[in-house]
Image (cartoon, rainbow, N blue to C red; front, side):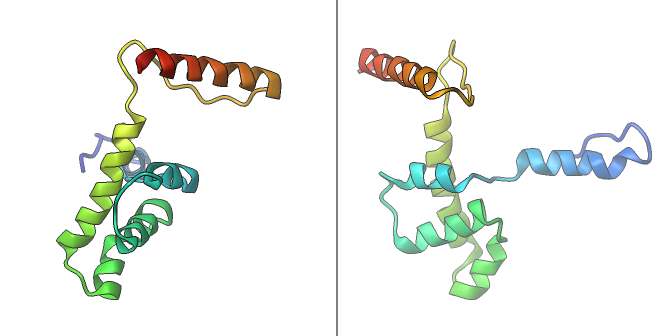
Length: 121
């Protein structure tokens, strides 16, 4: 993990926290359920990945609890994270947007998305 050079002595902690938050692998419960919908992994892999990525538990917790190697735990998390990254990839020339819209506008945006998916296929 790289640390940013602090601008002042008071900035050191904030700088470290900024880098930490930018590099830690996390996702919401909704993102997790979406990414694991079609993923072919064991229930144990899902349990480990959910605990680490959604609940924020350290991987070491599962090493002790499940008596697995650190590498096995890391691989379980990496598998789900890789699927999430692949699913989250935005093609060149496109931009991912999150917005809260009135129902009628959200309906229109969803129709645009469906039309785009049809043209890609």
